[in-house]
Amino acid sequence: MSMVVTATALPDVIPPVWRILTKFAYFMGLACAIGGVWTYLSVVRPAVRRDTTVNPDDAALLTRRALRLAAVGTIVLLVVAWFQLAARVARAGKGMAYADALRPSAVADYLAKPAKAGEWISTGALVTVANVCIVLAALVLLPMLFGRMPRWSHAAAVTAAGLTVAASLVPSIPTKAVEFGDVVAKMLIQAHIIGGSLWVGGLIALALLARTRRHLDVSAGDVWARIWARFGVLALVAVGMVLVSGVWLTYREVGAWEQFVTTPFGRFLLAKIVLVVGLVAAGAYNQLVLMPKIARAQRAGRVSNVFAYVLVTFPRVVLTEVVLGIGVLAIVPFLNGSARAQAAGHEIEGPVMDGRLFSAGLLLVATLAASFYATAKASDGLGRRDLTGEGVAATS
Image 1 (cartoon, rainbow, N blue to C red):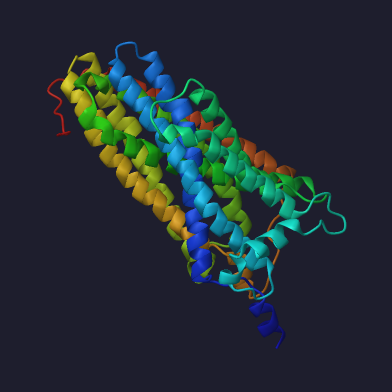
Image 2 (image 1 turned 135 degrees about the vertical axis):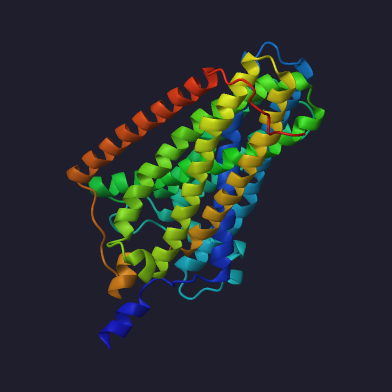
């Protein structure tokens, strides 16, 4: 009898449809907003500004379209954030229907709840701040959807970049005193979310931006080569954040190898890991195969080949990565509870972050940094090799 009681206390293996849709939509919106804004700021704008050979019309088109995509991303996040907020309200209410949680009065009541005993701030207040950040990010970029970019567009993008990251970070701030391990765990979860958003959102933004190829001069191949190279650096940072945090989260939620196949949580997590491995493999292909080919074509002065590589072949691979990334986000709503709890049949505490695990994490970070550096050097070395008779697989 006690087993029945504890088992029913576990989170639903398959959540309600409304929760699946709202959670997926929210993380898609977060990826579009964070990835779009940061890709514009750290990839497209610097690449265009530092390429003095790019056609001024092409430069203006690329920067305008990239910033517009970032603005669209924040608008998407603003829309889906309301439905995600209603999902919070429904989960907090005892048996509240999602349709009732959508009512503004129900949302207002949730946000206005005072802090509990021992809390320095209420959860509703933190959620309010997070949603205000989303609204402000959308407002500062809204003018970019219309006409040419104003002079303050760069400042607006920087502001939106900070606000979109804050929108993710603020709700995870502890409302009361917690142990050091809990703080580190929360930071790793946020690193996972933000790193994934940078990675998947950046891929989506550049895949859409590559559609401008029909309006670009063939000489724009060089600036696009610079764009892909800069995004490779951003992607490596994002991948590092995802892998380091993902290793910890997997260890915390899965207690034994067999739980990957014997529990629903483990099976969904395994599917997610397979998709992430596919993303990493596609990124490695870009870095070790396509980027060297582009570099060799540039050295040989094959302008049309460079254009074909960077705006036909590369986007095709990136489109595959986008599909894999969306697949990862689609699995996230199904990761409820933990494999440890499902295997035990009742709620069970996972391992706590301590000095030993923290040291192991630092070692993993150093190892990944070394491997990424080696990958970059290998890509550069392959690009300098002279391969006579190399064919061009890209076709327009």
